[in-house]
Image (cartoon, rainbow, N blue to C red; front, side):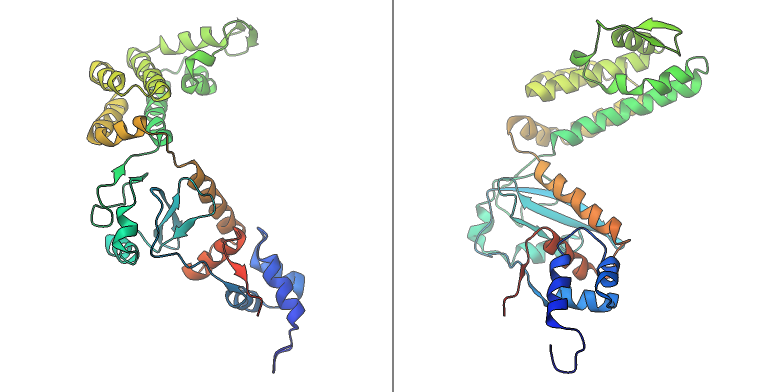
Length: 310
């Protein structure tokens, strides 16, 4: 026990070890009969935190962001090593510039690909930037869903049908069931998924054209056919809904990055999983006042901070 301290060292070690679990600090404090301030102090003092090697950066970087306090903070990671990732503070250019310029020029020049829009040529030498395939598909699926909602609000007769079977419009058409017939109360008869889908898209010409474009985009991403994607976006542009036209305009704006997405096999999957865990940590604690304490807790939970032995 430290001088002038009434909390034993064993209790402090137990608090530090419990900080690795995904539970709130208030629950940890109640479990050990100490104050919340004591738990925060122990967490910040019992761990030695990860210090990045400023002479090394991986060739491929993933980028994402999460909301902390009132700011959106960048989160970046290697695409190949699950244990190597970093958190910086805020997304402003001068913050990122200050962070990345800590690394040596040799380390920055080694970076070849990045999976987000934050990285500027100032930080790295000719990086190949590309969005994740998931976000491209999400852009068109949201546009299709908005088109369906617009048709649904205008067609009161088929309102319930368009509302109930919205997932069929977003489903890959190669995976639709055309053999099994089941009873559907909205139609008052037995139907298969393909019949329901054809009924829905035939209700509106823009909805049908938007659905066909969405399926073409899914196919192009799956087969990595960039030329077919460009041809499809050009041919379908006039017949689709306004929401789809906005999605096409966005893709055309970043068409060079989309080409890199279909050309290379890298994705942001590792970082999206880490992002989900960060949101769980934030939710069980009902938010954090200090960003630095929040970052420390994330590192501890992810076993990226080692407990001090001396």
